[in-house]
Amino acid sequence: MRVAMIGTGYVGLVSGACFADFGHQVTCVDKDAAKIAALQRGEMPIYEPGLDALVAANVKAGRLSFATDLKGPVADADAVFVAVGTPSRRGDGHADLSYVYAAAKEIAAALDGFTIVVTKSTVPVGTGDEVERIIREASPKAEFAVVSNPEFLREGAAIQDFKHPDRIVVGTQDDRAAEVMKTLYRPIYINRSPLVVTDRRTAELIKYAANAFLATKITFINEIADLCEKVGADVQDVARGMGLDNRIGSKFLHAGPGFGGSCFPKDTLALLKIGDDHATPLRIVDTVIRINDRRKTEMSKKVAAALDIVRERTIAVLGLTFKPNTDDMREAPSIPLIEDLISMGAVVRAYDPIGVEQAKKVMPDLIYCADEYDCAKGANALVIVTEWEQFRALDLERLKQVMATKPAIVDLRNIYPPDEVRRHGFIYESVGRSRPKGG
Ligand SMILES: NC(=O)c1ccc[n+]([C@@H]2O[C@H](COP(=O)([O-])OP(=O)(O)OC[C@H]3O[C@@H](n4cnc5c(N)ncnc54)[C@H](O)[C@@H]3O)[C@@H](O)[C@H]2O)c1
Image (cartoon, rainbow, N blue to C red; front, side, top):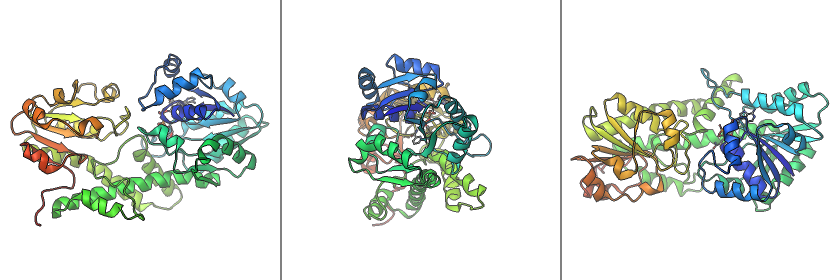
């Protein structure tokens, strides 16, 4: 099949490269000429493990190419995927659909022969109807079907997720379109990933409902962690004891600094707005958003509690990206934490294995360090914000030598055993694992 991928960001580039790897002929298109030029030089515009090799192999095989103009690729395509951004609209939190609609208009002018137009971007219920209307109005004679195909990949494990998804959701009631989608995804569902074929509106809602549910799970365990701290229980064991129940499941039950990233914050907010638009208040989602927002400021208080005073103290922050194995800084919990600490008068030193270039765009004036131990130099507290693998086995003795006297470690991801860290002479704070009060 011939595929045009409109939007070559995290989702578009990974999806395009994976479709090419299945043997399809893919052109990834983006308006950002610098991004396309970089890709044409063989440079990745984002960090995603394994992506550079996958892209290189498929470019070499002649199945994957890049362009800034969608006309040719769309005219040739059996399927045109829309994978442009749908950020929160400034001011009201609705999903900003201007990129999707602009792409739809451009696609309309270029269609040639029966083509399916597939929305991969996360979009509110009814967006497919509007995309269809836009294309029909712009090109009344075009032969096309609009399909919803939300994407569930996680940054940091995107290739594995795309190639081995828990399910593929396809929203269309057009048999011809369903057939094209099945052909495109055949290599995956032959591997037993279930294909959920439903109507377009349902498919659109599945994506938001799934993300909001996962955000709820995180928020739930975060509140339980707060309670653990008060009653002397251990949230790690509570989560394990809950998660082993198959009805609950262990994933997304890790207490931490609150959810961030490119999807959960904007998608929960957009779902809330969809509910409001249809006079169906989504009270659980509303509460989740508010608890998560509050949590961001609570993390700086946790650091302050470990230090007694924050003013003029040096704080080393390890991990800036919103999760490990990505360079994505969108809504990263490190940002409000660092801002709070600076406003409390602290000197913040920071280190991230991959995300520094992106972090500099958001926090240009921060002191960026060469590695973990350089970052810890002279610090009164070391805060682990993102659980990169390389932070899991730090040399505690070496840290103690480079840090100030009475050093503290604030482990917002619970990756260290409290007793071990305290044995090395650190003040240690984590999330939901206060020192037991009783037996
Ligand atoms: N990032 C994720 O982990 C993830 C996972 C699942 C779903 N999604 C959804 O996928 C969509 C894309 O997310 P992303 O993180 O890849 O976004 P992104 O911001 O990384 O990439 C979007 C790209 O689209 C390009 N673009 C915008 N308008 C265009 C146009 N008219 N023509 C060509 N290119 C255009 C931009 O230049 C940008 O490179 C969003 O709706 C998001 O919610 C993201």
